[in-house]
Length: 108
Image (tube, rainbow, N blue to C red; front, side, top):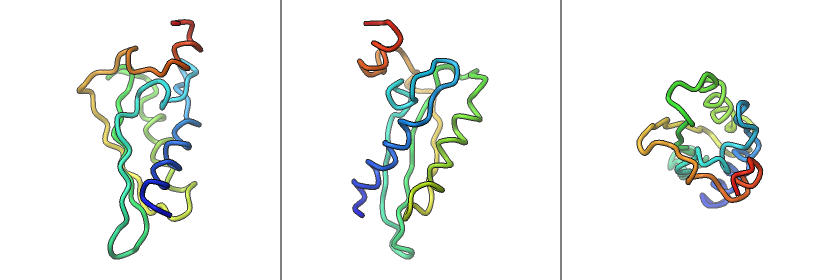
């Protein structure tokens, strides 16, 4: 599996994680800023880093959401490790949402 295919697999898994307060998946919500996957030279297994944010720095579900993202590594064969880089700059805003998410929330 190529690094790009692994990235696509991770993104597909991210689309199954929903923000419990908004009922939209975190990928379409625009919480995912980057997914970077590469092959470890020694183990030949994939390692990925997900850079993401939350709708608010005081999100009550932050630990749950981040742990769900981390758990992706247990669901994809060949993915050795998945690190989460939680950032708040740039801050999340509704403009980061996909059109599908905006439509689902009645914003379009």
